[in-house]
Structure formats: structure tokens, C-alpha cells
Amino acid sequence: MSFEKLGLSEKLIKAIDECGYTQPTPIQEQAIPVVLMAKDVVGLAQTGTGKTASFTLPMIEVLQDGRAKARMPRSLILTPTRELAAQVSENFDTYGKYTKLNMALLVGGVSMEEQVKKLDRGVDVLIATPGRLLDLFERGKILLNDIKILVIDEADRMLDMGFIPDIEKIAGLLPFTRQTLLFSATMQPEIRKLTEKFLSNPKEISVSAPSSTAVNVEQFIVRTSQKSKNDVLAALIAEENVTNAFVFCNRKRDIDGLTTYLKKKGYRARALHGDMVQKARSETFDAFKAGEVDLLICSDVAGRGLDVSDLSHVFNYDVPFNADDYVHRIGRTGRAGKTGKAYMLVTKSDDKYLDAIEILTKQKLKEAGENKASTSNDKAQEDKVIPDKKASTKKTSRRPKAEVKKPVQQDEQHYKKAVQHKDSQDSGDDDSSDSKGFGDEMPAFFSNK
Ligand code: AMP
Image (cartoon, rainbow, N blue to C red; front, top):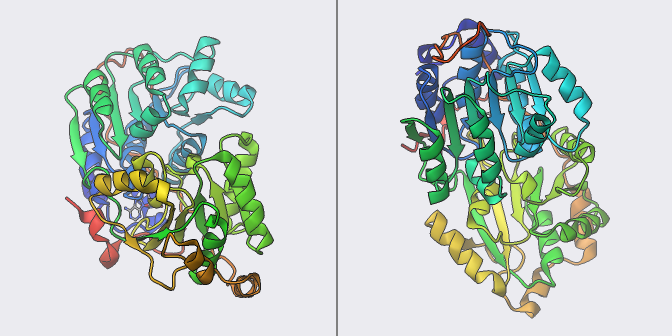
């Protein structure tokens, strides 16, 4: 199956080619034609499956021929985090480079002034986090009655973050006749209810069993104690061939301490969490993507949607309290046909959370081999496998410099199939050197179903 066969126009195909994509991923193959037919879609897909392009590509195709009026965006994409919003907008930039769509990003933590100016100029694609959007709406800076396409991305994360009431409120402000696309890695009953309430006879597309983890991510647990976690993690990092990694902590207060600890060990580590101002968050993530930072010590704010090509490892410093978060965290690696490794430090008191993850992902997580730091709860044994400071430092200094490739911005291409929106009341309309094609390397995960 080629992208041309999906009904995408030349401008989009050109941009896709430049991304190096040789064929659509299963979610793209199934979703793009349906979106182009103006039907509602429920997409059950994990990050890393090419899900973002499955809606950005057909949206560009549909929207490229129209023009937006001031303060009246024509499409709206809701995302749970600012980082994810930024990433979706990068997709539009990449795939839409040969079209002239106006896009605005409405996220919290940055000045409203620029955002309002953009809205005034007319916006075809509005990418927003729910809070900032409602804020601007309540200030009368934006009108939502020309929205023809609504995308709710990472709906399960929206649920976890308590955004569902906001989503309901926003959906109530949009025209009744519109196209709605909802994406989620998992389909809890609350998400199901949301789809029943806001989508009309949607086509359900699932590319992997909900809550499954990518087969191209090798997963291990390492038994340890709370006290030994820092040392065990440092030993693991030193032993593994880590190019770059996300290290997830459950608590923000642990993030800074761990970052300082790893820096002292000689690693280029930086913290990323929701208490940081947006500017610092963006700078940190950009530095990581540019290869200036090798270890990103983060909260779940980085767990969803953030896309770094070739992330070699994910370390769960803590077992997440919410089993879904495990799926998202480890989904940061093993993306787009690449392989990755995920390690999780487990203490005795984590057993119930570990059980929940194993039940959700229908697998028994292997303990890392004897050579992988600690494999026992026994403190004495743990201490034995932790390298002494000298050894660890030595190893660190020999580490090859991280080779983070420039992030692959996802393909945004414009689709030309002008979809007839029944409600269009007004005239309105309107990395990469490495191949991103899965080719023979298409992992089983991508072809799942
Ligand atoms: P996503 O699931 O949207 O976060 O996408 C994960 C990664 O897959 C991103 O780095 C995309 O650039 C990449 N990608 C998207 N579509 C394709 C494709 N058809 N072939 C190869 N890589 C892709």
C-alpha cells in the first residue's frame, strides 16, 4: 500500500517522501481514507505507531483549499500536554510544508499576546491544551463555531489528568455537525462513554490490543530497595549501552535530586517536569532532542506522545501508580521500527503496581540478568553489584557521546480531498537522514491487526 493510494495529493506525497516514509503504517492505512470521507474515527493506537500522521495528513488534505476567518479556527486538536501539542504542530509543519495552512498553538505557560495575534490573523489548525483554550474563549478572544474537525488526542491521558469535564465543555461549544476523531492507547469505560456522547457512528480502528506494549521494546525489572535506587540506576546506565534515555520518576521532588546525582556521576542529565515554566520545559526538551543532554529525568509529563527518534532506553526509576502510564512511558523507545530497552526498578512495596502492569500488558516482566545491577531485594546482594564510584565514573567517561539525530518531525501533508462539511455555513475555507520507512524492518507490533 502506498500513500498515493490513500488519496493524498501531490504536495503531501512530496513532504512524506522527504520524511523517508516508504509506506503507511497500519493506523495510517486504515484511518486516512476514513478521515478523508469525513467520517468520525475512534483510533486505538499507541504512540509510536504513526498515529499522529494518521490524522494530521488527512486534515491537511481536507483543509488546504479553504481559508479561515479571524478568530474562527476551522479545526481543533486537543492534547493533554504542552509538549504533545508542540509535537503535533511540528507534524503540521513537516507534512504541510507545501501548503499554506495557518496554525496556532494555544498552550498554557506562555504569553497569550502572540497567541491572540495569530488567532486574529485566521487559523486553519488550532492545537490546544484544554485549559488555555477555555481561558481564551472566556475572554472572548476566540469563536469556536466554525470548527469542522475536532481531534481529541491521547484521550486516556486527558482522563487521567482530569480534563474530561473541560473536553465536554469544549465539545459543547462546537458546531453539532462536525467531524470528530478520538485517539487513545487504551479504551476505559469513561473513554467509551465520551465517544458515545461526542462521536457520531464512528469507525473504530485498532492497531494493537489496547494496553499492549511494543514488541520491539525489551523490558526488564530490577529488584531493589528504595534506598539503593540511585546507585542501582547509575550502575545500570553505566552497564548498558545507553545512547540517550528518559528516566521516569513518580514524584517531582525526586527528579531534581536524581538529576543532581546523575550529573555528579558525569552524565549530561536534565530535569523535566510540570512545575517548570514552559520556556524551561521547551528548552530542556529541545536540548535533549539536539543531543546536548543524554538523560532526561522526567515526570509523566514526558510520558505521552513525546517523540525522539532513536531513544535507546527508558528507565522507570519508580513503578508508575497507574499501569497505563507504564505503556506510555516505555512507548518512548522502540519507535518507528527501532528497537529499545526499558528497565524498571521495583521495590517490595511496588508489587501491587507491578501486578497491575503485568495484568494490563498480559505479560510477566523478566528480571534483568545477574549482570544487570541488582536482581534481589536483598540489600547486601544489591550492594555487591553496584559498581564502586571509580568504576562507574570510568565507565561514564568512556561513554560514547550521544548521537541523537534531529527529531523526525512527523509527516504533515495536505490532503486534497475536499470533504464536504455539511455545516459549512460560510464560504470559509479554507530525521531524518535515516529512513523512516519501515520496509523490511516493520516490527510485528506495527502490523498487529
Ligand atoms: P507517532 O505514533 O505519531 O508518535 O509516530 C511515531 C514515529 O513514527 C514518528 O517519529 C514519525 O515520524 C514516524 N512515522 C510516522 N509515520 C511513519 C511511516 N509511514 N513510516 C515510518 N515512520 C513513520
